[in-house]
Length: 161
Figure 1: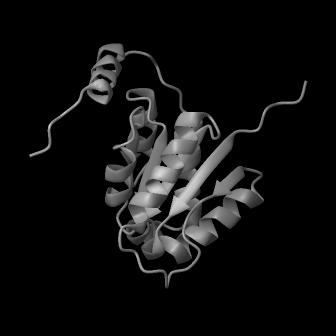
Figure 2 (figure 1 turned 60 degrees about the vertical axis):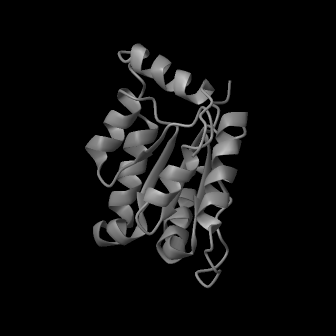
């Protein structure tokens, strides 16, 4: 029986474009199946593009079209905020391996977000090692009450003032 290849959905905004494209190429070179729904140029006007891209990645993860998502903008924060607006998404913002691993072990993160401005200093190899550590970590199930609380928030309706 052939082993199933994990499908990853990646996206970036214009602030991350240059570093992100190198990262996607390196990940594909290592054999990862990546669907890239990110911007196509560093010259694109952002104007909220990060939110559209985060939503596109989140929808593909929630629908099962992809196993996990990865989002990158300048800091990663805008992408994480936007992705977490989609019910069922647990986007995590990480710049290092340990928080990435713990975000999967403890909180069952399904989209990893990071910032190009931080990761460029650490390099492509380090960024790939962080992504791999996150991908191959497993949810331990020790925080089921917390996961139930997050699900409750997903289902709750709020009045915006």
